[in-house]
Length: 131
Image (tube, rainbow, N blue to C red; front, side, top):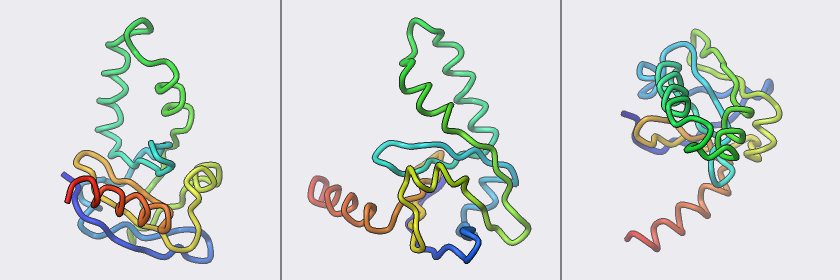
């Protein structure tokens, strides 16, 4: 399970370190894709395979084709390097508006990666609704 909120800075090559608390749960290979609200969703490979199987079981009639298309066409497998850094593909960084400062959040079965300003605005909205 992934929980917590962490702020990180991308390096000159646009890589950033994942929080140490997330690395064991993620493994070495992960899948990153477009998420809702212009964040990115990062899944352990094993979880991604399970999601894929669930979508497959729903079939073409029951599944939401547009959401599946949005999620799967934007997915990329990436490796976590030996010191816990990842490099997000450019098209996904653009989608999420990732710049120098990013926020990494744990959301149960996935990790979300946010533009810092977008996350701050979204978090404040959540706080006003649930606090």
